[in-house]
Image (tube, rainbow, N blue to C red):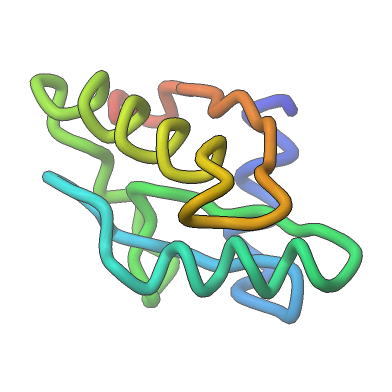
Length: 98
């Protein structure tokens, strides 16, 4: 997904298939509810580092790797989410924020 596409999604706001999660330092517990909801529908986009006001707040540089590891480990674990999802998070830099 391109930066322009991400900016357009943010501009259009949250919808049934788009969810913003600030997650500046860690994942919120409700992110997995969102993943399950999207999995039961036609998919969707979860944008970490974006708050509910559509502001790109970014994720702390020293937390990015841990957040990605925690997220992928959980969604790829059939004991936590079934069926497991095999997703690859993408890190983009927009306006100097990741």
